[in-house]
Image (cartoon, rainbow, N blue to C red):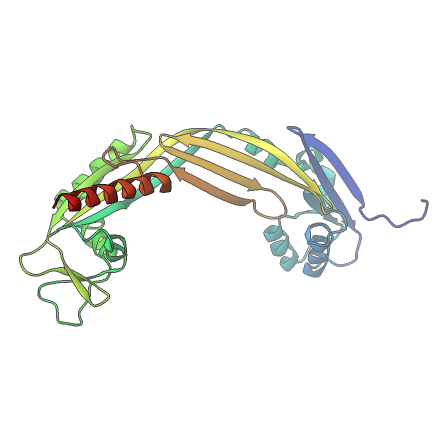
Length: 309
């Protein structure tokens, strides 16, 4: 309607890679430089949860420029600022949502996991009922330690004495593992059997002590490039449209998924990874029905054996 105040000075709607991009332009003709308060006001107008006009990008133009605080705040919020002179020379075609175009071109993903402890065990073997909790929470105690002296958990001990060891052979083994990872999409592994000093070394947990003669640690590292696909989507609800990209990549036994959510300021990234690795020596786990059948068979065998006596 004539004379009605507009919500947006200029609203540009474009499409990039099938995604609708809305860019709002706000012009200020004030005697003084535009302040940080004005930048925050416009950010709230377009990007807050109660935004009246949801858009993907915002450009502010001010005849007399912006204060230092306004420039810093706009940079953090992802708002582009232009003086009037800059606006006259600016290539306005660049104000489309360039992120959509950039992410849609992703075809590979660089994956690097530094050397880390993937498995740990001790000899002699721990009772199966307490093995997991003792390995995870038990405190290392050495032969020359006082009664109340502890060296942290087994993982902390292995991290210090094996993974971060300065021993030349250990350093060389880890460097060799990292080199092998460059040619194998599943990464590389290194198993270290670390004998302990003569004397009584044990893990202490819940008032009990478990002897430790040696520690077996399996190290793992990944360093490779995976083929990736990146698909743009737009979700629409009562609050407006939300643009995001779904990135999928597979590297050896690893499956990666990213959700790249776009809005004001930096891109928000959601990440999920799944490791399909299973050691060759690992036995497949039985389901509850199979385990119940095994127990029934064992009970039947025990009764039969008892009857013979």
